[in-house]
Image (tube, rainbow, N blue to C red; front, side, top):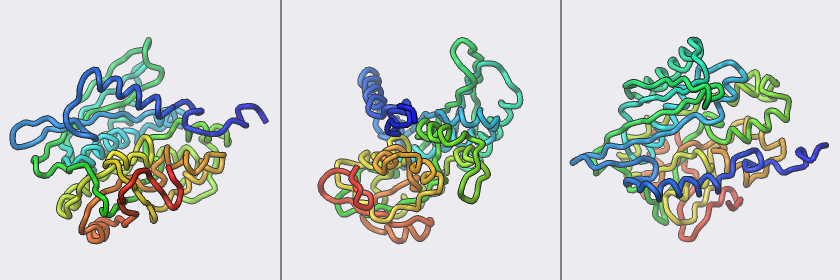
Length: 322
């Protein structure tokens, strides 16, 4: 066994240090300032907010490249942005994409466009244009990112802060979504590659499971508003630490949504419980905090009450402290 095999499997060792990433982000924010809002920039335009969110697909693109299948990454790009607006209590209305390529490829562009169209239709927003840049000196392969615009009456935007005593409602993810792929790819390549068959139903290969598109949560916006949601969390980069964006409290998770088999596959390669929950959504892709009506909201939207907010600090998931 090599020294690399002996090394603990973590997101940082795979190539992404979350602490360093957050520090760099804060350095950027402190230099340029920021508008109001945690998941989206909110611009006061009178009686409403104009909201903007921007994100990309990340290293999931490398899985798509390995499988020569770009058909679903457009859905990921839409979802990663639109879901952030929903977490702010804002309705996504329009999307613009940016595709940077090493060299033009008509087939790949068609696949990406089809995914963007499918994601936009599901999210109920308009694709209002985009840009394709050919940059062989900068890009290897391709990169896909986008910006989503949303509108919301001021009274409809979520406060964004939970309170002790609130209940937490969670909704299932579709799988790994579009974060943590650097660690997941490290595991996949150690375990035989993307074409390796999987020991669970639903997918033929590891690559197929990793490419499962990010779930959209735009359908939750109106029900969350109607039941008085205080704040919501989109469980993306940083995994379950995203709950801390709802305020400095103690978050006790007793009944999270079941983790899909792809997570067990990754963990069996030697990833600790704590690292899994700090990196991945582990089956729960979206969470809302509210003081009343949690059970009714969960019943109406096929969610579940996963835990509660208490005084204190930290995140505890079935006894595991993060």
